Length: 124
Image (cartoon, rainbow, N blue to C red; front, side, top):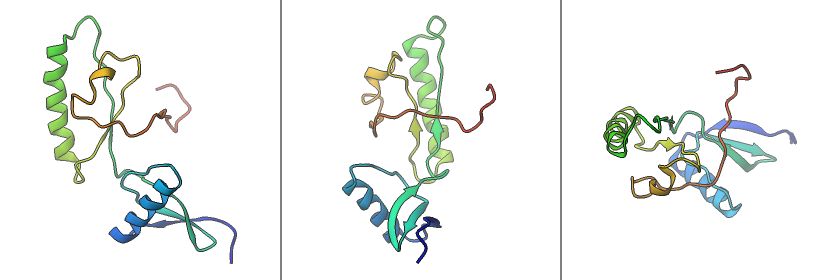
């Protein structure tokens, strides 16, 4: 048997649940896994590729009020829920953002502390 891992598409809810359970047992988390990593016939990881959209925002600290931000947040929520069949989306929020202490009140659940990286190396 090959010692090299392979990536296989998750095609059943049962496999998705198994992958999520194994991630939790390994003290980790994976939301809406799309592919399982299989090594030596065992699930050894997972990827969620494109299943959960990511929203990021910037609001000018001097030009936007808290009320303005809430109006836009509700509009953006509507757009994200219309565009996302699962109903899930990630909302990036810097720890220094004025929104950060209020994210749970806005209806967002913390998933895990993380950093977000972009795959392209050129300046965005």
